Image 1 (cartoon, rainbow, N blue to C red):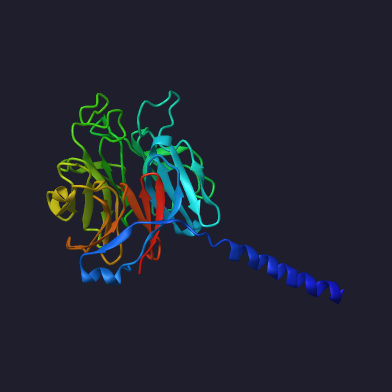
Image 2 (cartoon, rainbow, N blue to C red):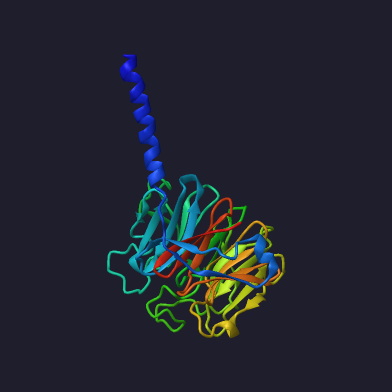
Length: 336
């Protein structure tokens, strides 16, 4: 018994180690870092490049890192699909349909989900272009299903246009942007557009929907600074390619300019779109030419330069990895 038992242990140990050693995937890389301020050195190495961890999508959006499952979720908006990516298996379909669940084929160019987040209870919350609402998935993160509960679909009795991006505060109140990009013509004159402006909204714990501002022409990406008193909004308007601050402590919430890139668009692709803010107030924002990195005062520290437009970004739980949805690709980039 001993002669057969000992080799069996050795063989089992070898078999467990071999797959781990073979799973070190070598990804193609892209992009470069542009250092504009010495403060960037504490955030990212100057020779860092982004890994292409997934590709072949139509328009990737809304990345969300789910720490408990060690997975990245992201939307492919035109194909009405949420994908899941893991180191072990790469990308695979997670939920389909994700944004339009009607019986009649959608005429929208981008009917799918867009921004994704988790509420304070760990439920997946989705901006749905096709259904024109913010919704909660009625299934666990581990066993997803295309079944949804509406959280916000109307303001003042009128249908929302196409909720784009979403964030929660610690009080479990929801904040979202509502530009027209999910509508058929993607414009303010779309015949299906019921609300005459493009708003930024808050959903209170009792379900009441409050308009925070209608003064940003194309509100898109949204996130809080750590004190949750100020929201940063990306404006994806070619004529006002700006980022704005909303101070929620003001009696009247009025957008204040954080930074304008309107005159810095020449020769590069992309607009202010999705963004994330880390615990130290560093902003990672998609913009003309790639990812713009700001400090909390709006000073540009540097850029991650990419050839194709960036839609959004996500941070890992330890904030050492930045995930980037980059047109038809998804990228991963190491931070300090």
